[in-house]
Length: 124
Image (cartoon, rainbow, N blue to C red; front, side):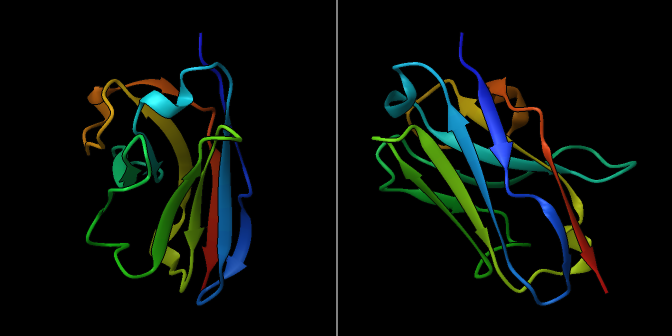
C-alpha cells in the first residue's frame, strides 16, 4: 500500500508563489511517474503536471506552463510543485498521485494512488 501526503497549500495573493510537497511511503516510489491534479468547486479534476520516474521528463497543462515547475527527489520519496505567478483561477484542491507506469500521463484514471489533497486559494 502506498500513502501520499500533500502539504504546502494556503492562501496567497495573486502574483504570489506557493510550493506544494507530496511525501510518499513505500519502496517503489522511484519506479513510477507522479502527477499533480487539481479540482475546483463544481468542476472536474484536471491535470496540472506530471514527471517521469527519473525526473527526466516533465509535462504541464497549458494553463500552468511557464508558471509551475514539478520536480522529484527519489532519495527522499517526495514530489514537489513550485507555483509562481499565481492567479485566482488556480484556486482549487491540489492532489498528488502515482501513475501506474514510469512515464507521466494526463488522465486521472491512469493513476492508482492519491493523496488527500491540499487547498490552494489565490485572492485577487
